[in-house]
Image 1 (cartoon, rainbow, N blue to C red):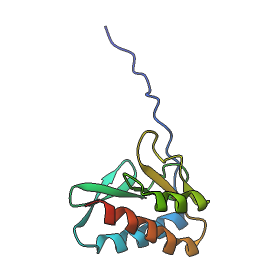
Image 2 (cartoon, rainbow, N blue to C red):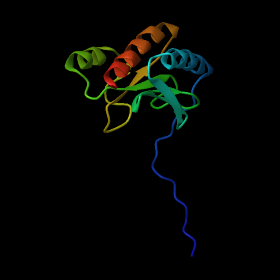
Image 3 (spheres, one colour):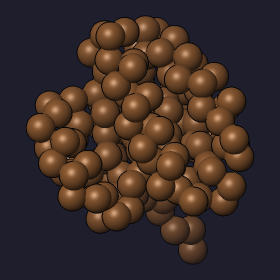
Image 4 (cartoon, rainbow, N blue to C red):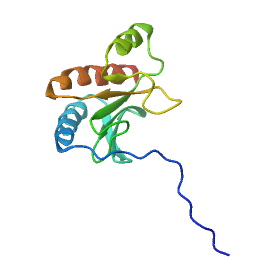
Length: 128
């Protein structure tokens, strides 16, 4: 007897924009130059690790919460950084992935790249 295939309840990952592909490539080039940073493909994203600890995800073909966001992991998030994240409307402090310490940073223009890089660096520094 054949079993009927069923779809899992995975969230749909949105396709990213051409602009986001460029921004993501620029951020990825910067992260690749950081000491002990390496990357691996993961679900339409490029996951970045510091040694064995994952700290970021940049979209390659798919986004997480939106077509224009990057994700970073800070666990635990220090209270001073959490206050800063809550005040930044570009950061989804409800967590990019439920039940984890992943946060999504929404890029609205090229001007947001500097701040995105700052947050990615915060995650990198805490992934020791």
